Amino acid sequence: MACLREYRYEILLKNTTLKECENYIKGHSEEAYLVPGGYKVKGITLLGMASPVGFSGNNIIFQFIKPCFGFFVIKLENETEEVKKLRDQYKKDKNIKKIK
Image (cartoon, rainbow, N blue to C red; front, side, top):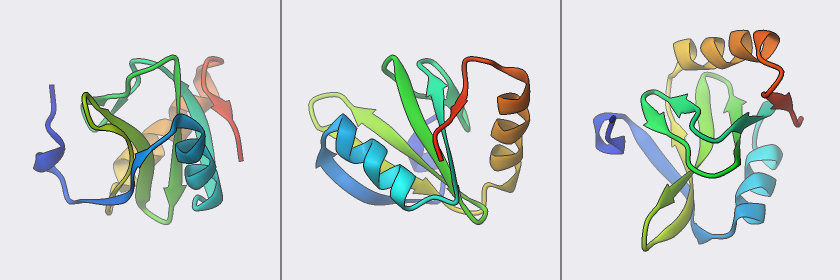
């Protein structure tokens, strides 16, 4: 399992709700997708039934759940390969829905 500390990241929103996370990601992304629970971003497993993941340039924005702390919105910088991976997966996987 990957650790967030292994990456260059920024916390954009913290201690928030699921709805606020989704609204933030949709509002600050050029494209956004709703991925099924268990989807991995750079080896980081996204928890929950479905999670929004968005892109702004080469940055990837997603919700992160930290037990006992709540929901966060995280931005990983310069993740061109991860952006391409999700776009390609979206074209193949009917469980991933475009939300913006």
